Amino acid sequence: MSNFLIPFGRGFLEVPYTNNLNVEVIDLPENQEQDETALIAAAFKKLNFEKIAGASSIGVVVSDLSRPIPNEKILKVFWTELKSFDISKNKLCFYIASGLHKPANQQEIELILGSYFSKEFKVVVHDARSSVLQRIGVTSRGTPVQINKEFVKAEVKIVIGSVQPHQIVGYSGGTKSVAIGLGGEEFITSNHSLLTHPACKMGNLNNPARNEIEEVAQMINLNILINVILDRKGKIAFINAFQKVVDTIQANVEFLKEKGLNIKDGVLPIRKVILSGDDVCYITDARIAIDCAAIFLNELEKYKVLDEKITACAGIAMVREKYPFFKTYELSEQLCRQAKSSIPDDVNESRLDWHIVQGEYNNNLNEIRNTMYRTYDEKQLLLRPLIVSVDSDGINHYRNFKKDIQIINSGNIPRNKVKNMLTELKKGQKHTDTYIEIHQLYTLLGSHRIGYKTGFAADKCVLFDAIETMDYYIPLHDGEV
Image 1 (cartoon, helix red, strand yellow):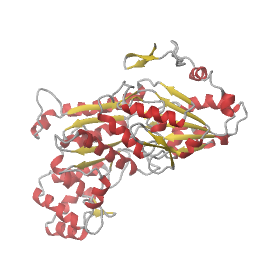
Image 2 (cartoon, helix red, strand yellow):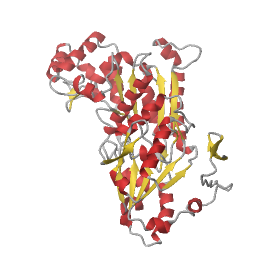
Image 3 (spheres, rainbow, N blue to C red):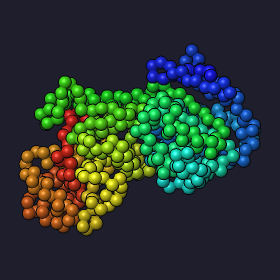
Image 4 (cartoon, one colour):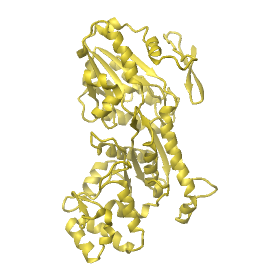
C-alpha cells in the first residue's frame, strides 16, 4: 500500500491505494501565479490525443452551474491538442450533467462552456426525467442503471469534474458525473436514499452509495476522468449564506421568545445537517423555516460564479417533531424540485416551496396537490413556489406573501373570519368572492393585490398560501426579506 495527500478542510487527507494502481499526483506549484494554462497542459501530457482524435465519436461530460469548474480553460487546452490531428468538430459532443437539477438554458450553457464551445459544438443538456435513456445493467443492490443513450454510444467517454467532500458518496467527482449527472430519476433517487446509512458520510469513500456509483463506471467503461480540486471560493457563498441565517436568528432571539419559541441557554433553534458545496440541509423550528430559507437564498445571490449571480431553490418540509427524518428529507427534496421546475428556461432566479404535513404523508406531492389543493371549479389554491430573488417580480413573489401575512396579523380582521376563508377558497372563486363581500374583507387583499377582488388571479388563489401558513409563521427581521 502507498499513500498520497489531497487538500481537505484546512489540512490534508492521507489516501491509501494499492501498488498495482498507476497513480500520478500533479501538485500545485509553490508559485501560485503560474499560468493556469501551463498547469492544465502539464496534466494532459500523458493523454494520447492521436488515439482520441481517431475515435468515431467523443463524449465529454461537464457539470452544470452548481459546480464552478473552469471548463472553458480546460477545454481550450484539450481542443488545441486535439485539433492538431485534423479532427472534425462533429465528432465531439458536450453533455451537461444536470441530474435532477433544473436543465441549463442557453445562457447558462454559455457560462458553463464558454462562448466558443457552446456555439461551435453539439451540446446535450441531460434531464433525468425526459432524456432518452439506455439501460446498461443492474447494481448489486438491485438498482436498474439507465444512462443518457447518446453518451453511451460515444466511442471515447471523458468526464470533467471536481473533487470535493460530499455528504452521501464521500467525495464528488469521477463517475458521479455520469451515474448521477447523466442518470435516470430512478437510480438517482435510489442512490440518494442511502443518505441515512451510517457509512454514507463526508470523506468516507467506502460506503454503499459510492460503491454503487463505482459499479456504474465498470458498466459504462469511462476512458478519461479529468478532475480538479477547487479552492474555498466555491463553498464560501453557501457557508456565508447559512451564517447569515444564524446571525438573523441570533438577532431575533428575544422577539422569538416572546412569540413562544423555547430557546434556552443560548442554544439557537437551528441545526446544520449538511453544508457541502451546493447541498444544504438544516433543521429549524417550522415557524421560522420559511423566512430562514428566504434569507439564505437572498444572501446567496450576493455572490457570483462566472459573472452570474448564484441562485438556488429551497424545499421546506414542516412536520411533527418525531416525524421520520428520511421522509422529511425526501419531501424537502421533492419541494425543491418543484421550485426548480417552476422557473422559466430563460430566467435565473431563486424560488422556494413548502408543505405542511398534517397526518400521514403518502410520498406523492403531485397527487396531494392535484387533489387537496384544487378548488371545486378546478382552480389552484397555491401560488407557491414563490419567487425570492429581489430583482424579480410577480404575483407569486415572496414579498407579496409577507404583505399578506402582515395584513392577517395586523389585528384589523378577526382571525376566525380569515381562517374560515379556507373552506370558501376550496369551494372556488365565486364562493370566495361572495364570502369576501359579505364579511367586507377587501382590506385582506391589500393594495399589492389590487385587481384581484375575488381572491384569484390567473386561476390561482392569491391568499391561500398566507392563510394556510398563518399559524405556522413567525417573521424574522433582518432588514432585507
